[in-house]
Image (tube, rainbow, N blue to C red):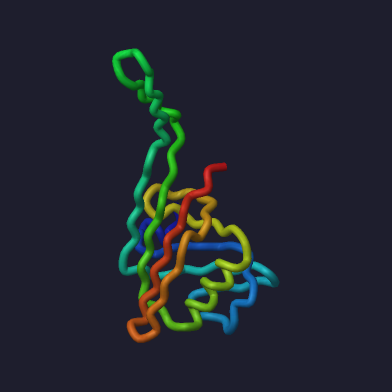
Length: 134
């Protein structure tokens, strides 16, 4: 874990390729075609699921459950940010596949955006990220 995560696990560190992101936000460091952002979040939740296979046996005593051992995580993030930070996140959304620093366990995690919601009047950004199992 980085020092940022140890001090405050409610800061999302996200990096990745960027496309058409508008003005630079105070929350980011931008390279030629990549960006690294630290988003102070009001809430970060994670839901982890295991892949289970169910086999129904006809003529037998029921069904068999097999734990396939694969895990997947869904991260729900809420943050109060300005429009400039929202446009940078949209640039990440359009730019390719980012990575985040896992906010609870540390380490780099490859993710994909599932959805983004932004309320300009409340300055509330909601992001749902899905872990990409490598």
